Image (cartoon, rainbow, N blue to C red; front, top):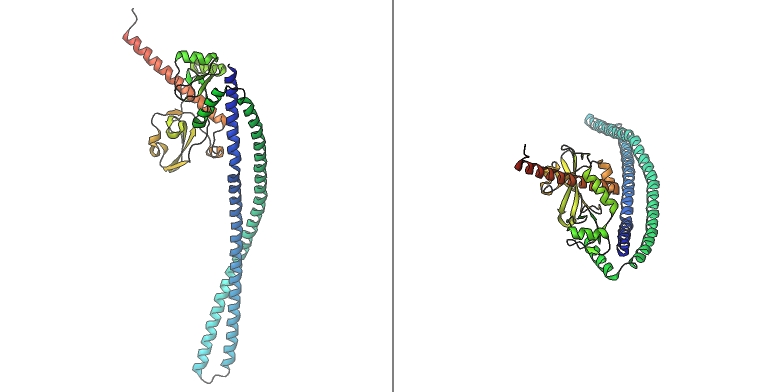
Length: 375
């Protein structure tokens, strides 16, 4: 392979790793903010439990004060009853005493209810205090790990930056300018050629161009996407084995609650993998860029199964094999793990090979029916 090409292949690896590290470093403040928000919610829960317990204590004291006032009134009414001169006056004082005694019983009942609840309130406060203590330790550990990861990322970023500058020095300036210009607008400046196709834009190369790329003796640009093309013999051998293998590709399950599709031109993303997951009454859609595995846009949720909720996304797509746990998918964050991305790309290649084989077989069968062999 031409030295410029070899250096460009390694340079693109460095550029992608530098981009990944920068994104991870930039994501740290958001991660810390999420951690702090979680801790703030636990603190608020504790404060609410304390406030409720404090309010109950204040209410109990209020009822106790009311009982003391009522008892004082009863004592006063009984003293007055000794000096009354008429039966009506005596009955009036007796009525006031009975009313005050009823009020005392009502306040005592409320105090009893508060005392019953007091034990539960104390448990809530202690549980919230324990949860806050444990969560504080856990969150401080998470923050420390995040800081350590960032420090390691920054160290690796410096190392990759040094490698990048060294590699740039080994590439022809004109070629380097073209690579960087295309990478700025398209996200990558190189594209591998496999099975006579540009693996990024999927345009099929002319035989002469394909042969020139295979020799690797000159810089060839894709006529469609302008990326610089290169050839890896090991990957081509893998494609050939996939195309001619006798093992049949597994069929995706029609009734699966989860479905993955390849879309050749999805909005601004271009080639993309679409992931749909059906819930009990709704479904979600995630979009991942095919070559980097990065998630494009937000997760979209709509009512109904994905076929009813997202019909506009299912035109011209290829159904793929893929079934991962919802928790696992959520854990991927904004980028597919390499093992998942490789699995989807491999299944896409197998699906295309199967389609080409079926088309070839159909064409051969049609030709045989038109020109039957002589008996």
